[in-house]
Length: 123
Image (cartoon, rainbow, N blue to C red):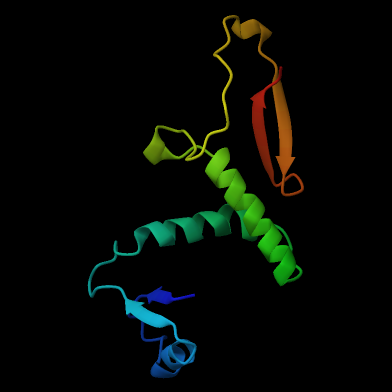
């Protein structure tokens, strides 16, 4: 880590900052009275907590890393994002749209031991 971006909450004492600066990490404080300054990071953390880490029992650092990697892959490749017209940031190659909707079959793939379900058209 090279930077730590944090707000100006009183919980972050000088001793807290000293731990990071002693490791060569530069502390960057968000601007005063600017609640939207860190909005993207706050949104990501909230989404990960609600959809991913609040539900399963995480039993170690290695397990947490695997869960977060899997969720990140899901978020970037499958989960729709409102800011992108309900498309994921890195969509997988999509087949041509179907001509007969009565013949469309879906295939379900479970992610994170069934915590998340992804659907795509079956061949």
